[in-house]
Length: 561
DNA sequence: CACCCTCGCGCC
DNA sequence: AAATGGCGCGAGGGTG
Image (cartoon, rainbow, N blue to C red; front, side):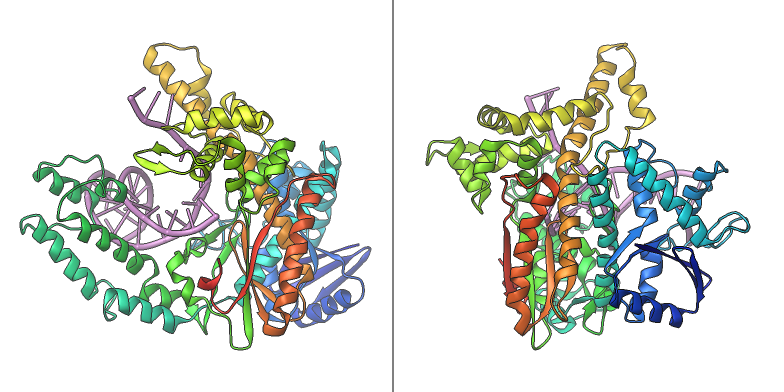
């Protein structure tokens, strides 16, 4: 059973079968709670991210939903039409054969609407939001039935829609964040807080030491070109000012420069200004963008939510009487590749929680070491390079020979990604297990790679462009299937968490649950059993690949792992 | 001033 | 000869 909810200018319309209601926000809340108590329906929204936060503020949590915009985007990509607008008005217009309006600017863009832009849903006169939803939903169901694996798309759409619920819930609940701990850490590393725009004491000292090391001439350590020139004057030519380049140089400016870089980044990306902007009432509330990345990974808007530096994990602490349950999938992507390819030999390797360690034993005779980019590398490191090269298309240094060895041992897995790469090189699309579909290459790409070779240089450029796109599609099948896995995990998990335990953070292959202390053990078990089911849901009951998680109930995020 | 690019580096 | 995927963000530096 599904119930369509449409929002128009603060009022709500509800379509339940042939019944139609108009509700105030308060009435809607009462209605929703009643429905959820009896037999939870599938709630249909034009967009969860636009409507659900209002319900959350009123204390409403939904179990299941269908996000028409997210699903439209996935379906359009599946059908090779990802450039078409995906909002409700556009989807409705396509069904009715009307002129298709562009998507409204995302709410994050602070752009004022121009004179000719209209606010609101952009539907034709006389068509209500719920009516449009009803029409689009029916059309989406027809398109699903036409697909090669309708059941996979249904799982994908349910999981993606549930992810949207989870994302809004996590933003509303917030990640516990101790501003006082964060402030103390900044003060310890940078010196006392200074007004925005000024360099903290420690950075001032380091900048002076850097200039001294360059003979007293002021050098702006924030400007890479200036650093390259400064080394040039010392007779040291470097291609860039990147840390790994600087580390190879024997010069007194290098140590203070590297330390400056490190601390300056902390100050600018996650300094006091960040605390002021993002931490309220002991919570970090980023805006997550479900499906914001072509591969289906989430993106975030502001706050760098998916790039929290590891050293700030000390700031993430459970409330008194609560625990943080931290769970991250161990080497998710190689396991996903194993399952996708149905590589039974590699599946045996996945039985170990440390996949790379066990892969090393399968690839090498024990204890051999070689040099890799000048560094001694043990077998585990080499096994990891081999696997990453397969998934990313790397061929630098020893990678190609390691990849060749991996191909010899596990031909099914390696040929799976190589077929995806070849498809990309031909300009074809590839799909994740559940049907996330890679975009078409650009017209510029087709022009570059399509023509017959005019000269050697043009042919080289074309070849490089083709290979680049091949690396993208090679990685897409793995990354997008990992996104499938994570979405299904989130969908499963948010249904099963006991009591007041709730998701507070998600990052690609890792979840954090804030849980009352006495429920933490149960939360750990729920997460572990959910993860076991996810592999079967995606790849079938007989899938032999294990997807183990590291799960830990801790007081502080930094204590996990 | 707004806008756009590159660089460099944090996360997966 | 060398060639690894996906992001977000801030700073510098240029353009119009």
